[in-house]
Image (cartoon, rainbow, N blue to C red; front, side):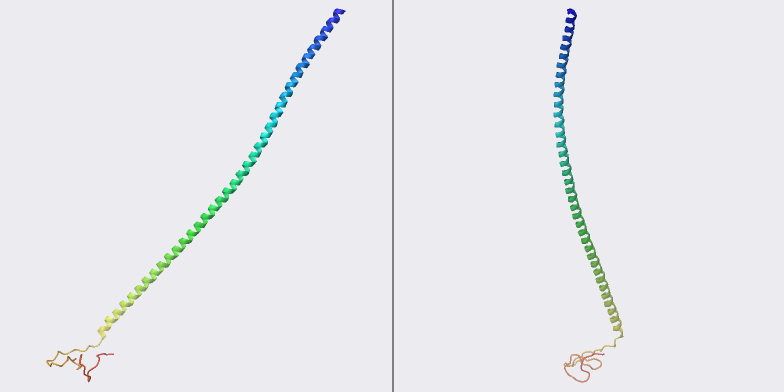
Length: 176
């Protein structure tokens, strides 16, 4: 039985050696898995930190973009307000210029109307005066100079013209 016992011991020894080899391989694998796990945990921690950093950068970029948007909106509102002010001023100037042009036109029309009225009044007066001349009485007629040396010309109504003497027939020849 010794040989059977030897065989059995040999089998048990072989089984133990195989088991030890399997345990050693399992320990190596476990150590490799632990090393890989530790690397993955480091990678995961690094990725989480990168994610936090990116989220922080994203939040800062969003805040910056919003602030820039507000600034640009304010700038645009200011420009629009200035443009409206300039447009209103231009409209006021245009209205004032139009009002002045209308006033100038009205003054020119008034002046023309007054000139026309003055011209018509003058023409009417001249017409009246030209007709009135036909209705005037006869003016005095003068005689020819007499041959006497110191005598002046006389009207046929015996009025002396340019004589210094006073008497009948002397004076101005006005008929009223």
